[in-house]
Image (cartoon, rainbow, N blue to C red; front, side, top):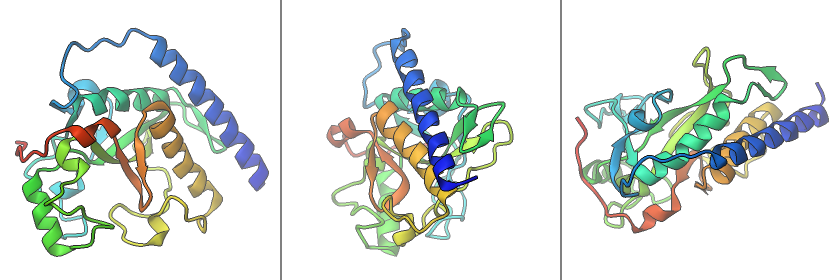
Length: 226
């Protein structure tokens, strides 16, 4: 398949996504009067999402287990928007020249992060490009940031993306283009869904990191999930 053919397929996928987002937003999606900044278990709102918290394992840049549980929390407002992205992916059965009979889906690598963990990370890598200064705080500490990727929902296999999670280098940047074309198309699918359907903003250094913009005004927290 030529590069032009793949980009035409990608454009078709984007058109389907936009139609899905209009449909989803037109549905009555009422989840009560929960405050947007309230921490909620992700699975309570999006039960079909995959969660693999990297900091509940040693498979992260610290090489340490920082979370006592794989239970993921996010601010309620971020979760409502993330559900729109998950629902769009679940209905997308053709992407990048491939058929996905069960649709696609999201896998979360990190969500809400206690501020005390932020201090531990900063002690290891005090570089604000990759770890937010805990004195200022991270969007993760507010429940407003999520690190994630796309999976084949049927097999749970991750789609090819530019780098592994927690990769510190230019290859993880959104504007880095020296990847195979199918990898760039996958990265752009995630970006387009998260920004255009979910209303999240990107972080230029990390293709996997997205922020719910209203969370800038949420309080910094040190709630310890169990």
